[in-house]
Length: 398
Image 1: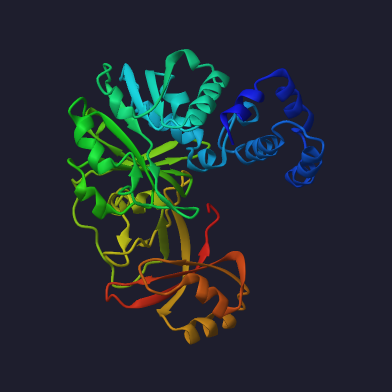
Image 2: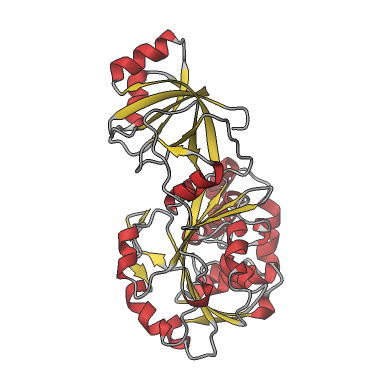
């Protein structure tokens, strides 16, 4: 994709082509591509790509049918529900420097509260972002520049938002921010000479060991849509409000759990109680399992594994955890598990493994059972650090 593609599809001729083919399915667009090429339709390749990406992005952006995208930009972009939440942390900042604006997904919501100086090295990305901010009606609150964002640190910046491009091997994004562009380890000391109010978007699969390489300890916020981790934010300066935080966004509300640090040690039971709980993935990644256990008076099955238990049934309508009714548990062995499931005439299962070397995918194939149903086999450990399987049933709330 080239900048000429973007400019063409802003013209009447380009808009007419989009309007003509926008209702076609992905399969129909594949077939259309050959005919457009044969008839020398201008910029046909990006037309097909754009229409496909608009369909793909419909769950990420409420105005996707009017936006411009490129494949990598959409892949790296943040769901707008998450972007809105992130932008709230910057609402007291009069001017925000955005390093790496991409297609403008975060720019749009930063501009709802602040003046934004959005920088990207790619002229095409800036052109796409400029269009997308206009679609959302915030183009007058954004100044776009092409180049090295670190050259703009002196322009009365109150805060900095960084969405670094993470180096890729082939087509695989790396979870590490050590190979990012800009290089976070090198850029932070330079940025902090101007402001310490910095927010960095990183992969939710980041390695905590890498945080030790940063000049200061950040707040770690892990953000999930329901039970799927979407991004992690590293907050510095006045934007840092906690040590760690898990944010769970759903249709109903936003739920936030932060480190309290003012409660006693969570009990590790010798045996599981009647109910077992699987914490939300954001809570697990943010290392806030103890806070969740304290809030609901739950105990642990093992001090290092993210399964909790209680005799009394607890439920969560805001996705803090899943609740399972315990049916049986035994020391893990494939033979025992097969026999147990067969005796109970269970034909469909889900498998969740926490903290053991047992491969859930391989185990599913060995059990030769269909996926789904109400039975969930949890694989974990008890206080004795031995591997166990727990046959459970989903509760109605899940």
